[in-house]
Length: 267
View (spheres, helix red, strand yellow):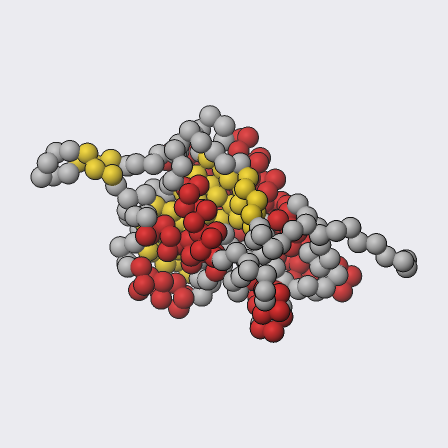
């Protein structure tokens, strides 16, 4: 990864470290907002995308216009993704790190009782949007010898009732990351799949259609991970020496473990 862009300091003629730039999708809340804060605190500039413009503007006001460029973007719209990348302002086009964080889970019921429109939205966001922005940015990332950090989930490996399409999309993200790693060998680009377990964010509120009681019940007493835990991991991976690659990293809170086998007596 090209960790340092170098430029001359006028008054001394020496070499100084220039700011690195990351593009973070899904930056309006949860992991994405925490990642933006962690990176800017470490001296990065962040292009932050998301659908909720008012939240992006609030993040810009918090972190500074020189550190954060807000871009309203719907990850389900491939044409909008390509137009966004093509239209980045001068000075923000050299991207060192792509963090594919945007994603969602919808519904908690079994497949046979699920809404197919929710399935389609998960596929469009978690898979189609991710591959569209990745493909669009590959030339810049290869030129930068940069990094791609994809947010998958433990649901990619461990199935659970109600996980159906969500788990399938995250399994895709995990396998796509490994495929990218294979294809990009020799380019200097690093690729990582981060696979978190239980973390308390707006995730469950979105999944349940805003059911605060269900969200509180899920996390109560579980001492779950936080968005800041995930952001710290992203920052660590993004700033590793360029000869090191973390292929996958699986994370859970201590109080979460693997589900047992399900056994039924009917059917």
